[in-house]
Image (cartoon, rainbow, N blue to C red; front, side):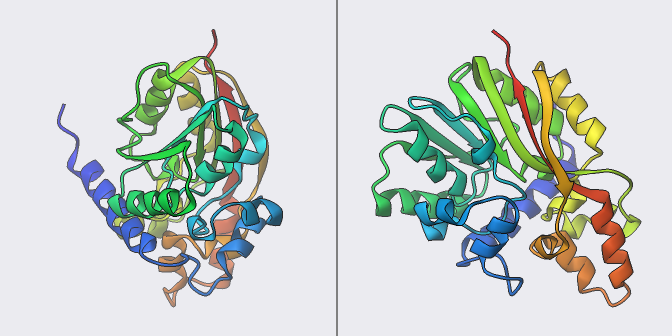
Length: 272
């Protein structure tokens, strides 16, 4: 079936937007350095110091590696791996017998992450160019899937979760940090295709997000943490930037928007 034009357009804009971010030293653009942003969403300073600094672009909305039970020898897959921060953190936990695979659809991100692998001598990390709706990964080959504030960018989240289920081994685990909605976004956000490279425009209701995971076949779907997404972290989101640059978008509007958006961390399993 031919992919609808709007889905192709969204992906093209995401790819272009994150390609520009990949060329920067940090995506935070004056809202604080990337380490500060990452600590606010759940990373420990010590953790960030253990990973290559150039892998942290301040793009996450949580820290799935802190909640996942990553074991030595695991094969870990990161959906939308970007410059590879979570991959490099996972690499230390899986050890030399384990393997970490990052998948991202932005060539510039893959290039940046691969340079880090070579520059730092990682032997258990690789990055593959591909869409999270069509993973370049074999069936039942992965022990654990991570994703950090990426699935909300997908125009076909149901397909993302079906693919995640396909590549996981029986007994495999899913651990995600992402943004969901507790109510309706303002019309100017929801209809802003130009701002879709930000996480807010693609976010869906919390109940829909959880339903899609269950419909893909996952069991034991549970929300581990849930909290408002800090507004100062939201400044790092492309959609939020578009809105905040709009003179008609008031501080009260920004507070109202922040009250609708939640950062959640969740886990699910593919039963044996």
